[in-house]
Image 1 (cartoon, rainbow over the protein chains, first blue to last red):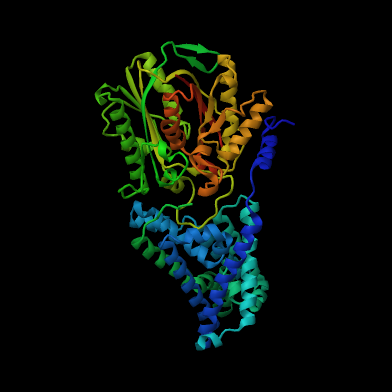
Image 2 (image 1 turned 90 degrees about the vertical axis):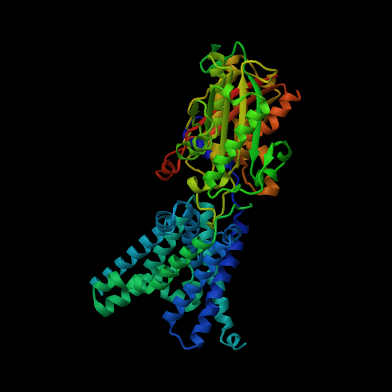
Length: 147
Length: 128
Length: 333
């Protein structure tokens, strides 16, 4: 089999020739950074609850604090360094959602504050809201119909 | 340091391990598939909403606390939980209002802080 | 000029590359070729407000530098061929709007610089005395347009390449002391179905192979005729693939072949994964490094094959594969 015989052969050949990501190292970094971010959330949660706040309100406070922290790090041009190191460890927690909103907002500032920042803010995070909210509505409707 | 006393160390360990493992699933998706970050976030939030709707994610939250609510699956779970709660309270309209109400704090914070950050800082070249 | 075979032109009076200039960004200035560039910038904005303005300034200053170094008055330069990666080639058209000479904007993705040299050489052979060619790219403006915002905390795959910040420019003249463009081989679009926008080297390698073999067939030359065969931006992955594909077709290029994207960065120290890419990669490495090697007669016969991935962000999102292109110029002293 020669690599240029067909597109499929070439794709297989390229897959063999392309170096893979260091998946074990990446998973390890994702594990401890992701775990650490969640633990920070857990500590904030404990503090809120010990002050007598409800679980819902404590959860919201955790989200807001982590989002603010992530926005702050993004603004200081540091979050991409964390992200490069931790991969999914900083992407999957709510910090990644915040970063995906803050980073296009900063990048597209040069196109103005209305259509640049305002319009492009959700280029990465928009789908998350569309699918998340739609899924929740469907869940609610199913719950209403069947239960 | 009275806040140190309020921490339950066992709960914190469960939170760390569960949160870390959820992130590892994301990392495997990044490295083994060609999915873009946006698609991975969508998969997580949708999975969270579905598992939340089925009542399965509640067990993970009870076990791991913030380890389950801080990852984006928790965001999806929160949306679904909010929708169900509102349906119980006000009927079908709740399906449309409950989810966003529950997640309002997070969404608004992200928009607000995003706008502020764009006002005060500039993108910089990655050095590596 | 005379047509050889299907895709090659041989020049009767080979146009001379009179002078070149190159300006690069800070990351390239940390790389192994730093000392060969005319100017290294300290930051990517270069005093401008946006990445796009900065890229325009880089190509403008590079062109002015090439004209100044050549000693030819800008009024004696009759045509300018230039291009870049941004939508509708705004870096070159905005950067060169005050140049006040006939301007022909070109797009060949990362192969633009050699496309410009090819067209410029034909123009010289046809009617002109002096022609200017230039190409630029900018890491930040390219990331913004083709990939993600700079501050997004994502990981780059091992096969991805790093867009070079910089511009290269060359002044071609009818007469001069060389080096000379003796042949050009214009490439065909070759698409082997690669869809991964993070693996451009693999997408472009078949196009480079096609042009390479075509050049040898049309001219009757063999790989060892050249002191150096240099591709534009195949990177480490694409370079390995091209060597093997060429071997498969019976051409051994192992000993005298290299790639500008491999040369411009130190893979280990600078963490650039598969190497450099972008119009500026081939343009700066030729204008900075290889032109001096030719002038010093350390390399006497150079085959420069610039490679381009003819894709944009829309086609990538619509799941299209990436068509590749490669243009070759044979430069001899």
